[in-house]
Length: 336
Image (cartoon, rainbow, N blue to C red; front, side, top):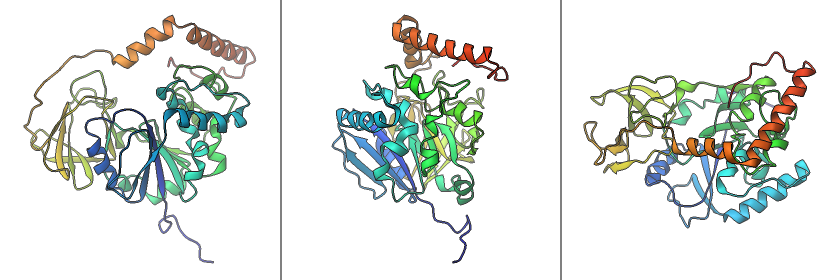
């Protein structure tokens, strides 16, 4: 039998997006940018009666109650207790489990992952190369786009219990509050502590900071950014509209956007605006620099909620016991 190299191999990716309620007002742009990535299927579990006009975007009708029962029934058998899932936002803690929860939809895929609805995709093929898909167990690590190899071992790494820095699934799945288990609350450190194979490059995508009006990122906090979407590709551009660097995708962090475009195949993206010309301006300009409302709400909720206090007390006690035993003294703790 002929051995197939990573360059010759054909990989197929499924990106999963459960979503309930109204989609962002620019979701048709999300769909259009997603449709240009032909080797990726987007599986959207939603209660919206939305129909797709693109072959690689598949809407699967699910009420939240149905998806909650599905998650509870599947995961209860794995962990021995009924996981908490009282509202749609809590599902972010279960993103790393999608390979298990939605396994019946993933038989034909070499990789699976998850993405958000507040992004504009570029040419993902330029970044998710065969070499990367073959070499790494995971590509990227954020909730807005993260991709895993589809095999049983990797699909169950969320069950790692001996977590020194992160929360573990037993702690997270017993509480109602969101712990960002898909990111820095869990999987980031599980992957790091166990030295699992992963590809990380924060500069391949633009994760826009929600605290400023201008488009900036963690690695570019001072210089405002502008973007140009053109024929399935996403570029950073200058103030004159000249393309500079190509990006895999743009994450708008739930930013409210105005739409002033006539051509989905070529448009510019500025703070709060999709437009035909780089010199266009939004009708209403807001330049407030404040803490993201959702983050502020979570901080207040954590300070006043007894369940949150009890959760963090238990986690702190577990970490302290591990420290006394000498199991985690080499770990540098970070405040999440």
